[in-house]
Image (cartoon, rainbow, N blue to C red; front, side, top):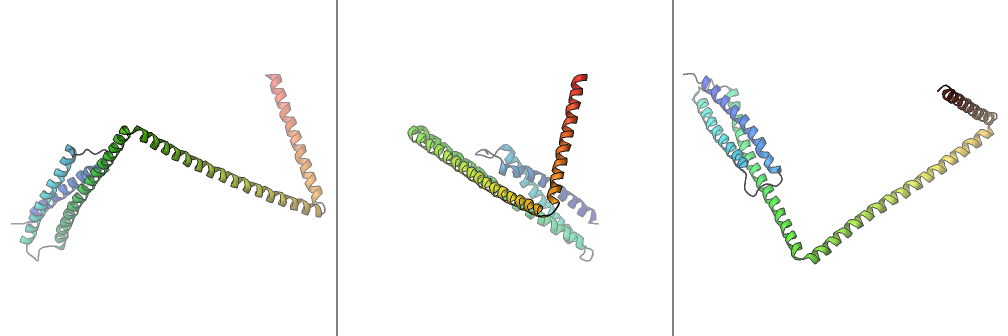
Length: 225
C-alpha cells in the first residue's frame, strides 16, 4: 500500500493546527499587557490556554504518526525533503511549547505586579485615612517639591534667555563692526562712496514714486466707489 496519501494528509492536518495555534497565541499574548488583570484568570484567558494546550497535544500525536509513516517507507525511497519537513514540524512544536511557558510566566508576573501595586496603594490610602495630619504634611511636602521643580525650570529658562540675549548683543556688535569696516573701506575707494549715495538716492526716489502711485490709486478708488 502506498504511504504517500497518508503523509500528505497528516502534513496538511499539522499545518492547519499550526496556523490555529499561531492565531490563538496572538489573542493569548495580549493578556500579558492588559491593564487591571483580575486576581484570577478570566474565562477567556483559561479558554485560550486550554485551546493552545489541546492543539499542541494533537500536533504531537500527528508528528508521531508522521514519524511512523516515514519509518515504514523504504530507506531508499525516503526523500530528504520529507525528513526536513518532519524536522521542521518538530522544531515548530518545540518552539510553541516554549512560547506557551513564556507567556504563562509573563501573564503571571504582570498579574502579581499589578495586584502588588494595588495593594500598596490601598495600604497608603488606608494609612492616610487613619492619619490625616501626617497625610496633610506629606501633601504639603509634595506640593513644595513640585513648586521647587517649577522654580528650577523657570530659572533654567531665564538663564537660557539671558545667554541668548548676550549672544544677540555680540552678534550686533560684530555686524556693526563689519558695517563700519565696509563703510571705511568704501570711503577710501574713489567713486564707490558716490556710487553708494546714488544707489541710495535712486531707492528713495523709487520709493516716493511707488508711494505716490499707490496714493493716486487709492484716491481714484475712493472717488469711483
